[in-house]
Amino acid sequence: MTSDTRTDTDRARSDGELAEQAVAPVPLVRGELPRWAPWGILVASLVVVGALLAATGTFGVGLTLVLGALLHAVATYAVSRFVEGGRKATDRVVTIVVSVAFLIALVPLISVVVTVIENGLARFDAAFFTNSMRGVVGAGGGGYHAITGTLIITALAALMSIPVGILTAVYLVEYGKGRLARAITFFVDVMTGIPSIVAGLFAFAFFALFAGPGIRFGFGGAVALSILMIPVVVRSTEEMLKIVPNELREAAYALGTPKWRTIVKVVIPTSIAGIASGVTLAIARVIGETAPLLIIAGLTTGVNLNPFSGRMTTLPVFAYNSYAAPGVPREPFVDRAWTSALVLIVIVLVLNLLARLVAKLFAPKTR
Image (tube, rainbow, N blue to C red; front, side, top):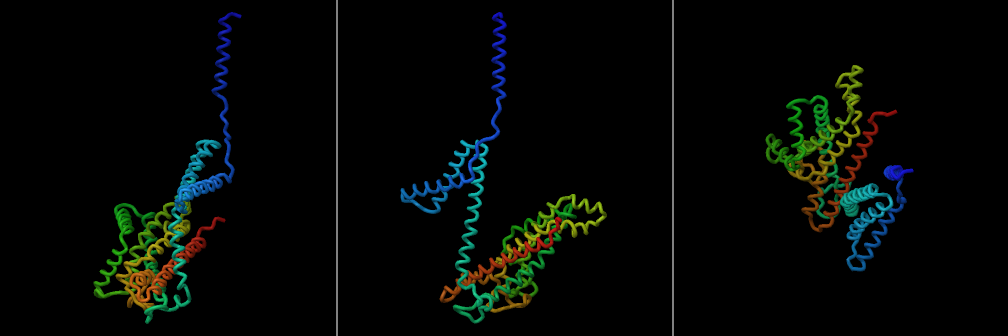
């Protein structure tokens, strides 16, 4: 065999080896950390940080949690990158960041709920729900007049706002086109951001034109709350109606169903869960308002069940007045203020549960 032939053979052999190396299979399966590993790293991070802070004399629960979370993220990324690869390590770090952000968002919520419960249980008794403040100057009394005022004014506001808001949203989604629809959308956006005191001033100025500047009654407060409630109902209902698939509408039209019947029988039942949640959100938005009701509904110590005559107190106004202008001694007034806040939270919770029940009962059956 000549030298040229040997050279060609060697070249072919080396090219074949390079080709085999180039197409060498890359392992598709990497190592995986056990399920307990993230929790183990978290505990170890907290222990290490706590020990270091204790050794330096700067130990604190908040500081330990913050530095422990940072060390946990760094250690998890390093261990996961070594065992599982860069992509899985990045995914774990992002999961940690999202979880920490969620826990941070829960801190003020849990703090408010715990504080209100601790302070509100002092007067969360039968007397608070059965007695008013008529003739009471110190301890005793209750918030019965404020509870009834809250329920009456909020119910009237919801009675005015929910039909208007839902029908407006239906018009914008199903019928609205042109300048009128754009104008309605613009004004709804503007109303969403107006301060609550503006709604109270508007209601007071409107009714003062007919009854004079001394007008104070519950229905005026309901009108002020409805101004704040309508844009929330419109926006939430509009978004729920938009996510209803057009195929459902087209199927109903193909069967010869009129448009109004399609909306009533198909579109609204399909989105009823979201609409109920939006209505509950709107009620929760207005039920705790204080400023507009101070202006137009006023303050009274007795029970008034007629929203069209006389002043009417609500729980937010009662809590504000008890805390801002307490009598002597101060403690009974502050206790009543905290209990009013607790009762308000309970009312919102009950409304939320009712909204979920309504959504479940009227939602379209899938079977």
